[in-house]
Image (cartoon, rainbow, N blue to C red):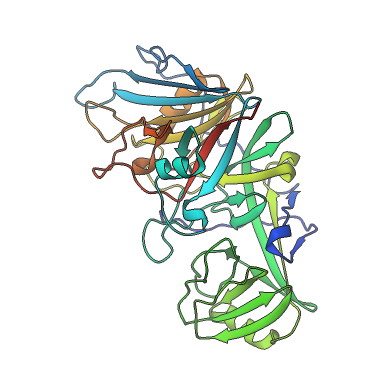
Length: 412
């Protein structure tokens, strides 16, 4: 997926300094400028259809606090406007079950099927998660926000929708919204912005690679890399690439004009600090400060109980919202429960796929008050008790993905 990054002016705020990965805490600061605007294209209610998507859907408890259901709605027609739609649903009581976001191979790169991730973690239910790079050296690298156990793995992309998980002790809370990343490295009084984490470099960028990414940076020998251990420069490697990432530090990688800055200001043995921050675009969302894990996807589908699709604001590809594709979505219900849904597609006579408006209408039928789209297409997968219960659209079957959302019953 190719889209361009956009930035907005934000308020100044305190930053969190990165020292050792094991103690790397997350700081969210709320922005009072550039508040995310609800798009003008708002659809309320449902399109005129002869049958509700959920009329034939019945949910049964498959684990304590985890209900599952499967149905086919609609019927085949020449233009597929009437379906059919093969739908799989998980409804989760967040007082009795918990969620965990995991990355393939437990690194920042690499691919693994949802069923493999569910089996490795012994999760009774799972779906696919966010977008990712599908090929090349960095295949499996997340395209969008990824925070695992309070460690930032990947920064937000194009200000797209994200959700976060908050542990309140007696239950899990889920928050939806949009975040921005800002980072900097400091050498004495001199500072340089950080464009991102754990991903390939674009011209003139400075990127930080952390231990959760991989053993090395996997970079080409066309930039400079600074190996930092406990806030001290352990090595400066120019035009060599693929530096080893220390467990007690990180690697600064820079190309173009950023490389020249590093050559001028960074010396072996000197002190260097890395700090980062996440800004909430919506004002007043203080819940992000308590989130232990976050995942980006997009676009937003529902806001305060109404369809509010932000595909243009999030710079999705043309036709992404209006074409019928396999879809995966996550939603918070009015009841307080959480919904994970897959809708298969690209299979004439079996499942036609949905537009984002149709997907939002499906979620409204369940009582969704907040919802966002996740990665879909051939990635759309749901696993229950080690079985893939939907019908992935790839001819080769289940597609390896970068991350998954796992569901577990809470211990008694």
